[in-house]
Length: 147
Image (cartoon, rainbow, N blue to C red):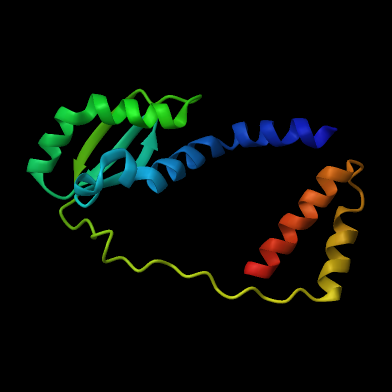
C-alpha cells in the first residue's frame, strides 16, 4: 500500500543509497583492491559520485593512480545500478592498520519484555498492510533486542 511507495521515496530523499553504496564498498574493499592495497588504502567518503580513498604513503598513492581505472570498474561492477564517476586519493599518513583495529563485538541480545512487545504492537496497529506491520514490528523488536 502506501508504505511500498513511501520507503523508496524516503530512501531516495535521504540519499541512503550513498550510505549503502559506501558500506558495500568498505565491506568488500579487501576483495576489490586486494590485501596488499587494502593494508595501505581504504575508502573514506563518497561525494558527488566520487569515491575518496585515504592512502598512508605517497608511493601507494601514485600506484593507485595507475590502478584507478581497474579499481573503478570493479567498484562499479559491484554497485551495478548506481555508478561512480571518479576516484580521488588523499594522503592520510596516520591511517590505522585494518588488522590492528579491534573488531566490534555485538553485545548479547537483550530479552524483550511482554510490555515492550505490547507497546510495539500498539504503535504499529494503525498500519493496514499486514506485511508492512509485521516487518516493522520485527525491525523494532530486533533493534530493542540489540540496543
